[in-house]
Image (cartoon, rainbow, N blue to C red; front, side, top):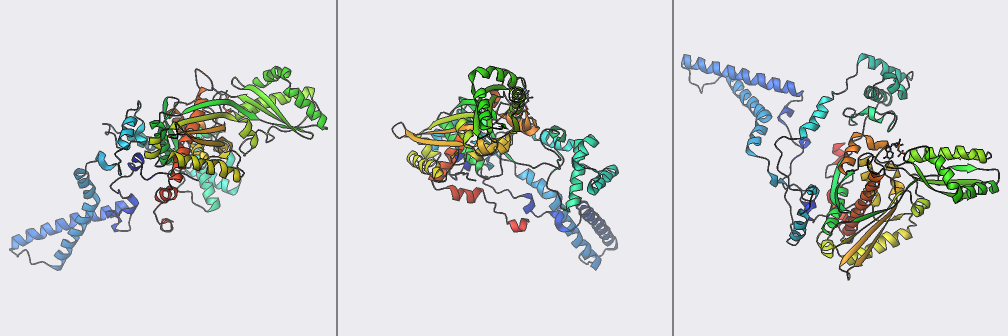
Length: 584
Ligand code: ADP
């Protein structure tokens, strides 16, 4: 869980507001005066205020009429005067202060200002500001001028349109039957034909069964129809994960704003700093080397000889065409690329590799494999299919086969970071980065017996992008296999950095990619859905973006470690100053 945010780079610092804006929870409110619901407290003080005003005015009129001196006051008048002030102060506190403040303090774009600006950074940043697309808000944090009509209303509208779920009497009956076990929880969607209602009922039944509250886990504001039969069974709500933006990430001549869903402080800021260093150095180059998803069933024979017969048959180039025709029947996009077998005695593991268009491809490859197994049964009737997956694929487990052969997209990405940028943005030197990389990412990982883990924190970036874009986060295991290389170039002045990632498993169709939030993140990257022109182009571009973002993350974290800032910045940005015991 390593990530870092430098405390002294200009863009990162500019994220810090100079005025501390207190959180709502920290601020005492006038309505807290009495332990009553807000509307009752307000009603009470309103009534008090107008009653005493009426009383005092009538007393005043009476005194004038009877020529009684005004300063001669009775006990009830003293009480009325005190009540008048108390209710006036309350009403001013509740309605008045915010209104006055909104008149006195106009929102100023200067609330976010950069600290610790360095003269030399100006030159670098001038170049950065000359970028084509103004998506550098992540780097340049000064607020843009406010648009005339606030688009935030759209977000508000979405929530306003969805009324908070209210359970009816009929729902109550169903909840009771779920609690009693007469209605299976999993059957609610099909029984009710309303996914949202099913989730609400299941949730309520769960709370009653467990005696535990789910308040805090939102239910409203999610399209439960969109996950039915595809993404999640038996939903009771959804977890909110913030999405941050790192970028612009300049790769292959294009700028990308990279969405990262994470709850790890420093991670987005650190990646953002890496993006800045890459941008100021002319960008990264990311090359796709291979694109093929794999599935490896396990089959068993009576003898090792028969297993060997099948291996020879499958690996014979003369049989490939027949097998690919059979395999490719499963999909318009799945195209068999190769077959690689491994034998363990009488057992054969057959690793099929196929292209999968813009899909990550697990379903597609599995269907093709099933076709081939059915076909083989004719010539090899003694073949016993143990399982469609025999772990030689290898999915969601660390395995050398993926590290060596690749799985999904294999990508290499490089950048040459200027010495100036290393010093001024990354606050370290080329020499110390190269040394750290050799001792940590290469030697240290070798000492640890790493498998594909020759990097600082590739999985941090991969996981955050995967969650934001609807990938399968479990595939982070092999998708994060990465070797980070660094060397001094141009007479030792500049830094050459590369990341080689052989198993990036991503798709832009299927799975979680079609859900609204994830789809929006893919859209931001310009890779939403199926590529119309070239099937597979979107998912391949996504893989090159993932590798480039990893490069940015490696650059920044390695710099932080080499400059000795990691712990300091984590203590500052990754540790809440809230008293957790009180919060609990
Ligand atoms: P996966 O194989 O990654 O699990 P799915 O099977 O869920 O993915 O989704 C792939 C589906 O999307 C297939 O039915 C396929 O026919 C369809 N599809 C549409 N356009 C494309 C495309 N450009 N590339 C890949 N699949 C596509």
